[in-house]
Every structure is written in structure tokens, then in C-alpha cells.
Length: 112
Length: 112
Image (cartoon, rainbow over all chains, first blue to last red):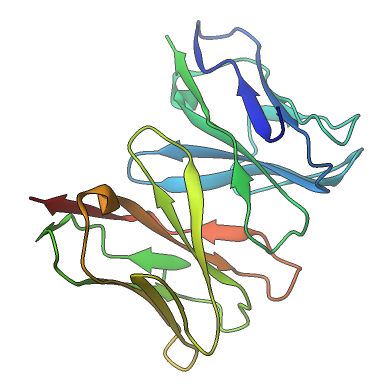
């Protein structure tokens, strides 16, 4: 199916574990983004990517790692999960950086 | 001053009412502006772009005031299905250079 998909939809993990959230888009958009959404903070940018092998930090990158070996995939890894990383994570893509983004349906991550 | 500020609401209005949301932004160099809609436990979806001359899409009207650095969204003849959180979004870097910054959202509840 065309679009942007995230997996898993829900994830519970333990403190200290590594966890990877997946994001896949079928439009061949150049830009991809990872946001987290928390009550009281709204959407905050974690990392973004302008193209394959080009990534850059956003507002809240600490504790996260990204890679983009293929244009269509942009996985987000929590190297050692902490309770403060409990959040809803949204991936988005766009042909242009400053234009409207299309979001995936999100991953609800709980770190216990 | 926060980068993008919105009144969090909630706005509780009866069906058929007209409701307006305002949003202020801090970077006078910002070039792109959007309103997104987010339903409960769903991803944000682009509602409309905001152009300098103002724009209308059915019951929705968006206005931009660059001098005062604020954006507005007017919803006429509110429907129950308009109940959602409305996110004000600004490209803070100007042109295609910046990432989108999201306001925390204004919650709208339309009652029968």
C-alpha cells in the first residue's frame, strides 16, 4: 500500500533495553522526520534526514540513534531505553523540508 | 517567547457555531504556515496551508498577519466531526531551510 507506515503500533519494553521503531514510506520523499509527542510538550523533533545517508539532530536527540541506508526507510533506535522515553513516536515524510508533512499512524512506546 | 504559541482550550461550542483559533510565532523570517488537525490517539493530518493573502476551504478560513506574527483559523457552521485538536505549524527557518515547529494545539469540542 502507498503511504507511510510505522511499526510496531504498540511496544512495551524494559529500562535499559535497546528498541528500534520502524518507518517506511513509498513516495520516495527526500525528507523524513521523527517526532515524539508528550502531554504538555506537543510534537518535538528528534531527528530528520534529507536523503539516504544524511541525517541531522532535531530538538531532542539525546538517547536516540537513526540511520537511513535507503530512501524509503528511517528507523529510530533507543540505545538504552529510559522511562522518560515513554511517548508516542511519529514518523513523517515530505518532498521538501519546509512544506507540509505526512505522518505515519504512530508508535506508542512504554518503558517500564 | 515560545516559538509557536496557541491557546490550549478546550473550546466547547454548540453545533453550528463559529469558532476562531489564534496562534503566534516568534521568528519573523518564517515563510510557511499550516494548520493540522489531530484526532484523539491519531496522527496529525494537514488541514490547510496558510497563505499571505488568506485562504478558504469550505467552512475553514485561514489568515496570516505577518506584522503581528499571528495566524488564525476560523471554522464556520461547526460540525460534531470538527471535534479534534488543531495544531498551528510554522516553518521557523524561512523558505525551505527550516523544519516545521508545531504548537501544542488547541482542543475543540463541538456539542450537539
